[in-house]
Length: 452
Ligand code: GAP
Image (tube, rainbow, N blue to C red; front, top):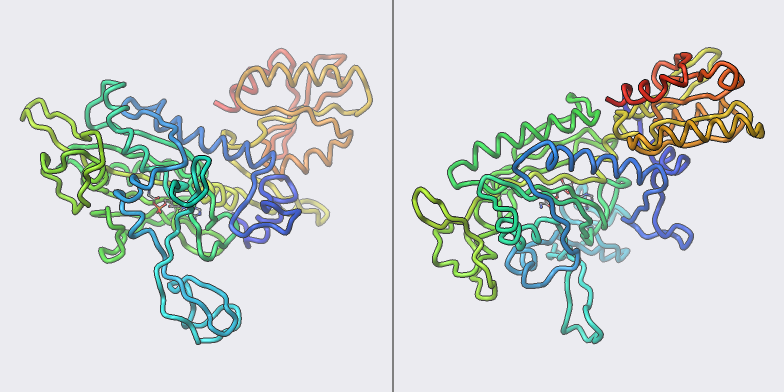
């Protein structure tokens, strides 16, 4: 089961501290959101799960954390200065601005007028000045994708880690796009995070690696709790491919507002390293690249068998963290009817993604002995390092269960007078609502086993 509407998710996110409108107390800014106490944990857990699957569980990928501010030289040779734009139209009647390719019946969504200007390209990159003189002569861009500084660091990573192809560089971080019409909550925003892998391969092996990553990435989303029936793979039409791509497959997800892209997996050929390399003429670059006389470094690798230097091809799985969060929240959202016409909302998150792993709750708020024992239990579980454990000193067990169901906490542990007398606690399971008595001595093992 998923949420019925986007409003249900937006409301839960605000009520339970997942996601807030950014700059809210001053009226907010469109296309910007802040992650609250639960949101930041969920987001960190999703990113950690991706990082683990890319770097720790494989032997052919290295990590990177590069700068957000990016030289115009990089974004000129990447093609972004010339081509990273959307078609913009003005409504002559109400003076509003829209993305031409998202209009219904070529009319203004605001006033319904069809008196619109011709579409013109609007570059989506944010610019900012750098250094103490603000006269426009020294500027940088806020990166529109994390990928470019992976390419510019290719040689640094290759030589410092003794790699040869096939190998990859993975990065998670913020990207910025001045979207004309941000919309659908955190689906299309102006500041967002990406999880990007650039996987470098020998030309000729690129199509097999492309297929490999398309399959692998779908499986990963299913492991994050997405029902595979809500995922669809599409091959991007040739006339809609980005300038760097030979073939792209998009993993689409049934978001509450419709079927849309969650992740793209592109075969970027030798476009990127070929664009950024020094001495382009020395290599047999297959992609159409702009002449580069500024780069200081050859971005090539040596093939020992043929004794030739070549520019690797790149396979790029590129996923949006925020879109991932939206999909995962949507999948996990359930409304259940209980006895006596009561209902509960429960976020059935996979335990590894839950913002809080366990809540430890004293039966009575002001009983010193109970609270001290609760604190001890909480500290011991926290030390196991599986994620955040909270001491929930609300004095109202029913209310605590309700809150933890809604934020997706897998288990609640109640500390009562039996705990003091008999060294037992009551553990309640989020999904089944079953309660069981667990001996304090066995609690750590019980907890570790639960998250195995
Ligand atoms: N490096 C390739 C690249 O950036 P993209 O298809 O433009 O490709 C990759 O972006 C992913 O980033 C998308 O599949 C989406 O999940 C996310 N993304 C792109 N623009 C976004 C936006 N304005 N808001 C939220 N996520 C976005």
